[in-house]
Figure 1: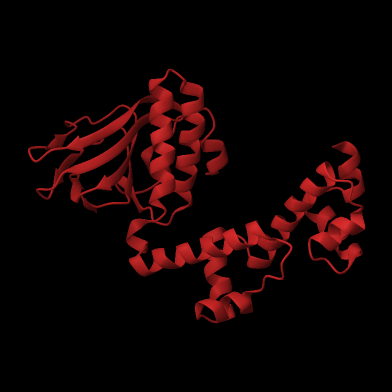
Figure 2 (figure 1 turned 30 degrees about the vertical axis):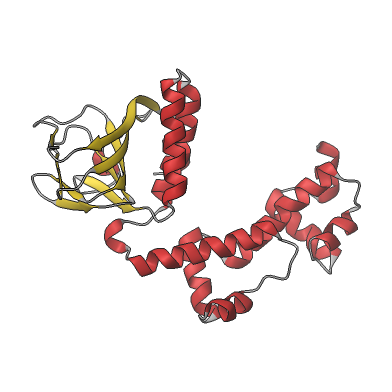
Length: 264
């Protein structure tokens, strides 16, 4: 199932933030919800229990709860602070489309992004701006689906995910610089081969392809907003061979730099 198609025309039914006190005990009843529910834990520890399995939750835990499923929630004598969004997909989607379990449980290590995005979803929804709220919620769900399953992740894996994000940020900030796997490997204390495999698993494409995409995206900006020649754009982005730049630009965009400038 393609995430892009799935995230089109989402409908939010309700959303909010819950500060669960010491007496909190949550039970959806045997029939559960009629819609999906995304939970994101900001504070505390506890668990979600179904007839067949239990998920331990803590700060950063994010769960997709399915319709028509009986859930029980508990916590460990510590207030749970939870953001949640009840929603529907535009198409008829079954729980089996995502997982054979009773929920989809992931650990979000970039908690700041998810917290800020969901907070904006809640603010917009409460301001009767449902369309904008759904757009931001689609971004949150995209981040969620891009994250590996909680049972497959450990804290060291999360740290390595952040390392990949740092590399991406460095490339995004200055695509014209000479970035290489060997340089990053030496800086972070890993082999170039290991960094390359880690990057590909986390991002979904190779390091070299990400670098090329970033440079070409910057080239598109320079072509549409400056008077630099094609040769000047290539040089500004660290290309020593203009012909190679043109070939790479056409491979990625489907058109030449000159034609792209005329069309923009």
